[in-house]
Image (tube, rainbow, N blue to C red; front, side, top):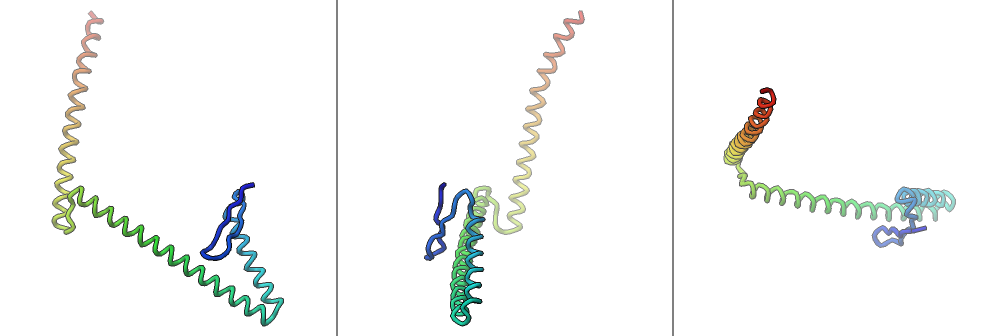
Length: 142
């Protein structure tokens, strides 16, 4: 069976069977927490001290993970904004609303002209094909 070691920051890795996956890992973490709580109850004052230390360690891990996720979200947002800016530049869309409206209207006009040209070409292609198809049919009727 193939196993993978999963580590949280500087804490020792937890061995996880790949077949069972991350669900199994989370279950192990949950059970470890329950075990820590059982020790808390079993050892009284010493258990409470240990439990409180474990809770603090858990909060530290959670906070670091949250910070990392926030950093990744910010990097993704920056990349999205950069891509949008490049697209606006390529499409020559202005930042100001008035100028941007003119650009959008110009692009719409160009799209309409291209659509008309495509329709005209499509119609021109269909006409000769229709005439050619009609002539052989007329000859057969004679």
